[in-house]
Amino acid sequence: MIRYLISAMCLVAATSANAYSGNDLLNDLTSTKSKGLTPGNALQDGVGMGYIMGASDMISQSGTVCYRQNVTNGQISAVVQKYLESNPETRDAKAALLIYIALKAHFPCEK
Image (cartoon, rainbow, N blue to C red; front, side, top):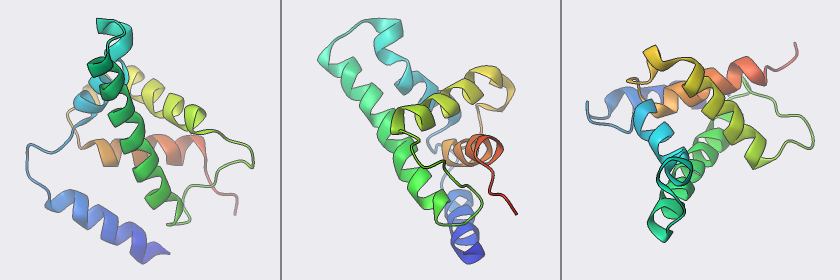
């Protein structure tokens, strides 16, 4: 399990400096709320949610994040969005890493 996490972190570290950041993710997640409901803004919201769900699926395979039985995609997304809003000083980091930090803190695995 740990090798999945290490592989994922290596992949994140190997991406370019212009990778999808926490700022980009928060902008996508709040597009409709901040700019109004249009097809383009709704698409941006979906991109943010899709990115979180993809990262969440990958992270959950590492065994470091354990979701409660009935947790929804909306709840997972809300946890990440709240983390991004509460930690503006970290939002320039890669979105995948910030998702990992938020989910690990909120959904730890019991030992």
